[in-house]
Image (cartoon, rainbow, N blue to C red; front, side, top):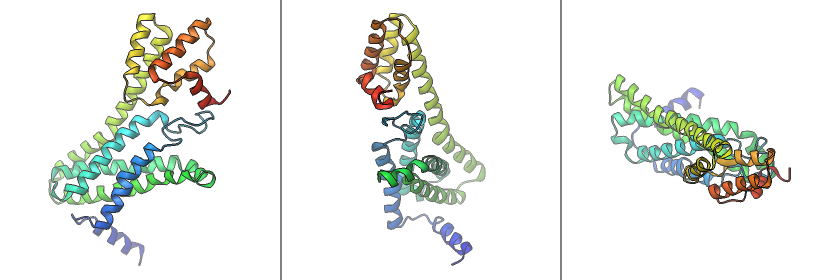
Length: 264
């Protein structure tokens, strides 16, 4: 079969509103279960758990974890919507297409960014196979986004289609991006207050960070690095800083320092 014929069959399959059982199973495994599994058992991508410097391996994309988690959640829920009720959607089909096609691009970029680590992980540990799931997730999102787009084109006017696709892109990329930026700024400013504010201001910042439920442990690794590199005025200041970290995270800052930097 020629490349042209293969492409025609591929496009034709996703112009049909019904999803085959085989495709439904594939989409569920690699569009829903696979990504969730990767986040739960993430060894190095969005979590800094390596015993070497985080800038070299652990937490490759830790700064973008909220963007990835929130975007993945939106994408997975939208995929479930498409698989369940996609053939009945009208204007919503354009929105679904915008979300899924954006998600396909992001998943592909993540897969490419971590590809060297995935290959290394396969050769050394075997767990690197998880790093190839984003490519399959990208394929699932692309296929279903393409189906939603082709169906929406036949059901709604072009201006409505463009508007709904744009809204989907905003929901899938812009909102998670703003949330990630806002979280990083919030944490950085709060840590600055702990370091340079008075006791009352520092305590208020500790409480704010303590209740920042959207943050993972990597959020506060800047505190660990400051603790490692800074010269405190006296021993009590260092102890107070360690106690602040403990109150925020529930973890010992010395243990986290060794986890991230070894005995450096």
